[in-house]
Each structure stands twice: as C-alpha cells, then as structure tokens.
Image (tube, rainbow, N blue to C red; front, side, top):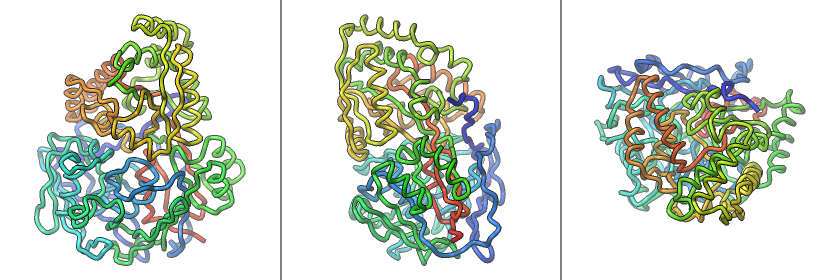
Length: 566
C-alpha cells in the first residue's frame, strides 16, 4: 500500500482574487497546426500560494513527428449513456463523450495540468476585490445547429446549474462547483460578468473542470433540457448513438479555433465486461481506456505494463476519487450517531486498499494535501492498526444504542468489477460487528436516480470522482445543507458556516485551520465516511499524441488537441 505522503494532490494556486486584470490567451493555432497555449499574462496568486506537487510520471516527451490530421480515436465505455444533458449528469461515461461536445468558460490545460486557460472565453478580468469576473468570448462561436452563441447562453446555463430547483431540474456537479457564485449578467455583445459572494480561491478551477458546461438557451427554454438534443459549441459534433453498442462524434467544420481539431472523430465502444474491455485495449481495437471504476483494474494495468511497454503507456494517477459509505439518515438505526460511529471505527481501511490491488491511500474527507497528516491519522480510532480496540468499542456503541443483538440492512452499490469487490468487502466489514446486509447491485444510472431522489434503503457503497482537489467541491457537494450529493440529507448550521468561512479564506494556512475544525466535527458526527482514496490507471497507445490524463479523471476527457501518429 502506498503511504499517504506519496500522494501529493494536484492543487493549482489558481487565481488571484486581488488582481485587477488577468487575461487568458485562447488556444491559438500555430503554423501549421493548433496548439493550446496557457495565459500569456499569468494570473496573480492568492496571498499564500498553494504548494505545487511533484509532476506526474510518466510524462511523455514531445513527439518528433509533425502533428497529423485525420483518423478516429477509439475508447471504451463501461455502460451506456442514457441522456445527453451534461448539466444533469454526474458519471464519468457521459463526461467521456460530451466534454468533447459542450464547453465551459475556461478549462484546464490538456498537457500542463497546473494551468487554467480560456475555452469559450478568450480572456477574463478579475476586479480588485476578487469578486467579479468579466469573461470576453471568442468571436464567431456557433452552436452545432448553426445558431450564434451569445453571452446570454452562458448566463442562462450558469443560473440553471447554480439554482436547479428554480429551473425544475437537477445539477449534481454544477451546483456544488458554483456554490460561491452570486449572479451572472450579460456585459455587452461579447462578455459575461460573474459575481461571487466572496473572494474564492477555488472558483476558476471549479468552473474549469468540464462540468460547468454551457448549453444552448434556445433549446433549454423550449424543451427544458437537452437530454436528447446534444447541441454544443465544441470541436466535435454528436453523430450517432447505437444503444448498448457505441457512440460517435465527428469533427466540427465550423469550430471557432481554426485548424482544430486534428481528429476526424471519436468513437466509444460500450463494453460492459471488464475482461472484454481489456482485450479491446490489448489488441489495439481501442486507443485509450476509460478512466474510472470501469477502467483498467490494477491487475490489468500490471499486465499491460509488462506486456505492452513498447506499445502503450500506463498512467497511474491520483484520481481524486474515493470509496465511501453513505447512510440514510432519515430512518433508524442510521439516525443514531453511535451506530454510524461504530461502523466508522470498525472499518479496516488498509484491508480495503489491499482488495483494490494495493492501490490507494487513506485520508479523511479531503484528498491528501488538505487532509490530516498521515502520522496523526495512523493513530486515530477508525484509521489505526490493529483493529481490535476499535472493533470492541464499535460493539459497545451498538449495544449502548440498543442494537447489541444485531442489525439487518440493505447495502446498495453500483455494478462493476472494482465496485463489486468493495461491496463484498463492505458486507464482511459490517458482519464483524453484527450488521448483516444483503447486497443490492444496480446499474449506475439506476443507482444515481435512486440517490438523487433520496430513495435508497439503508446504506450505499458509493464511488465518487472529484475533479478539483480543492475541499470546496467535496464540502459543497456532500456536506453542506442541501448539497447536490448530500444524499442522506445531513444538516448542521454550524458546519455550513464553517464551510462558507473556509471557502472565503484565501490564506492557505488559515484555511487549513478551519478545515481541520470541519474535519473534527465531521468525524464526530459521521454523516458519511470515506473508506479510502483510489489511484486509477489509464492505458494510452503510443500512437496517440498530445494527450496526457491527469488527476481528477473527468477534465481529461477532451481530445481537441490530440492526434494519431498512424
């Protein structure tokens, strides 16, 4: 098992919230082919910049050959994509496809994961008080149906994600990522002004993840969503979807960045069986594996490293994803903190990582940089070894709560090789303290639907992929009252105030102190708990150039700069 200290999180010292102006250069096409450029004038930093982590390895060297136009890049999906409205989705499969169709105001640089660059916006300015962002858009942007893009499209989408109830919709990702936003306003024919409630160190990175995607207002206002109308502004246009077989996008000939993209298209093959997905990669039928719970399993990654070293690169990346246990807090016995704390105490997190091929690390609620230091964590009840004392205390708490004779329950989980293994492990962990569960295995779409409606029975073994590495995403999604993924409906006003306070604190060390207070409070209440943070593997054939996956998984689904060498 890797020690926590070996897993530095990618944390950008994102933005300045004190600078008056921060222009960001667009992906400008060089001669003879396009290349994405970082901001020409660097965005100034918060007063105490976030420390930078070591570079991810391996980092491919620049290809000696010239970029090549043409070809269709092929990937796998582990499940079908039921709908096309990315603002209403939360899983990696729709992100894999539709991050190439829809776009945001800004994005993460595809090769330099520390940088934020413009996407729809060619530049932006930040007010001296750090609360107002004015984005200026590229000229000539068109929707894929030929309609011109306007700043009002962006305003409408941001408001729809920020307050989904007002639009009678859901926004599982965007709502939490836009928690700091106050309002969005059109600022002329080519600009949008976004005002935040307070200076936020994470705001630009949050909206650069791909999930804060802009959709066409002219369709949303007529149909209510774009679940069956995938019309974007991106480098690729939706072509076809053969249910349970494949999805395909093709090059957008009217793309506003001249010369991009290189590829003629991208095709995803829907392969639900893990062994068959791996076979498709090993034989070269696909160029890039999926990254996530239906991507390469640890054993498969080891085989690929051994047998395909001359043909493919296997990236091991801190995925910012975690396996968690969620409670239905509206019913007994899960509304009793003693029961929740008993499960948290008895859980053998080191054993959970061994089940995962010894890939992963232990942290509390946040990813490694912001979490309690490993030397302190390893001494803490629930995290320490051996487990004897914690299991004894867990049984005492259950008896005190009136459940000494045991509990029967249902544990819901998503279907998949890695998630199935963790569900079986969870069943065994619970049995150690007299909680006997039946496993309810669901397709991911059904699992998400039940959770979004708060209709799960007792417990959920949940796999969640974070995108930013910043605590704001986790806290505003899972823990704040009314959070889009606060599936247990946990509510604590004092915690809500702490969450807002840490988000508005720009000094890193001061923010860490507030986050430690939140950490202590959550570990006392255990509204949910993290088993471990995962480390995922992505396989990329070496014929794929100008592409490198990075931490957080979802932002690296864009292939507008990638090209095929053969």
